[in-house]
Length: 76
Image (cartoon, rainbow, N blue to C red; front, side, top):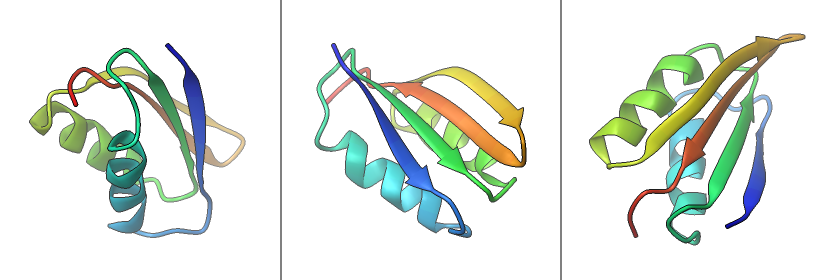
């Protein structure tokens, strides 16, 4: 099990979701991905995409102008 960080600064919808999808496709079940964005829509879009695709959202946080979503990969 590993934890990776995906930098999506300055990317607007739908790019954070697309980048998240591409990265998760390379990860194993149980791995975690921390997505860091500056687009506030990511706090809704990434969790919605995660639920639809069978992944688990562990955390959503706003900190210092960044929006952070942590996703656990639940299936390949």
